[in-house]
Length: 361
Image (cartoon, rainbow, N blue to C red):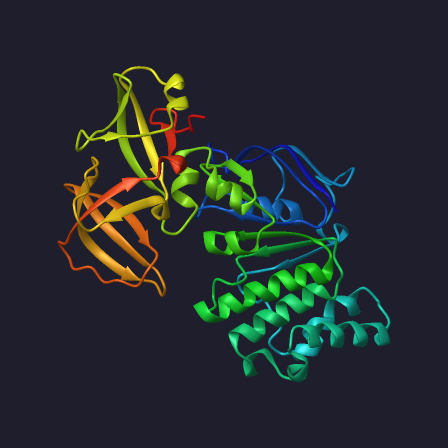
């Protein structure tokens, strides 16, 4: 089912400011779309408007070619999975999964077949006669997902369904969610503030901040081509390094150290003398030298050295209380205060206007 948002805005009664403002977005049938952003940015509000649980202040919402602004939730053919499992505690796993089908009047034999098929796929078929209090949190989340899948909805809505799980279980459940999405062949919208969820699961990410969409794109597009400073800082772990600079006499000068930063020459045509800019560079695109090289590298001192497995992430101080993170693709432990020299792979440098925050292209 395609979903189209046309100039959608939401303002709650008694509020002066809009929770969401002028949202325009097209979601294709069968896509796994992650609504990403910090707490309070409006992503859950958007999900609830799709579900029909929140009214729309302005604009139009379409499912396919049908305008659904005033369509009752029960008539939208959606299934929603919440952060809390919202299972009926007095019912067995089987009855929790079968309940909505029973309400719809589906035949008992069909209900039984659907529940057992989905339960087997989710590996909870051995728990069908347990109560929610008798199974783990991860298993409860599988039951909540299974309850949604058996309904065969056109649209899946998921509101931070993994936030209550531990890190290891969260990793495995990401895989399960993608499998469920493929199984159901439905359009899926998934709300989270965790960019790792978005990067690993999404066909498309919609990143929100300050009540508006900041960027829409695939995980790779968002990582490699952020269109403003917020996107650059939010996407990626470690996040993109951002350094204040000034364009002066056809050079990019780092404000704190007055060192020149080399950037692609084509970008100079877009700049004005004395313009304040921000250099963006990912941690993996920085070269590290343990001895002072002949070229004009930036001298830094080690603040933290973190072994992440096969790689090491180093936090360096390049000026007083100014830090930059570098990923070194080997296992190495630097000591606090060690001197290192860094230079940038200018092929991967991003340049942002400090005033507007937008990327200079």
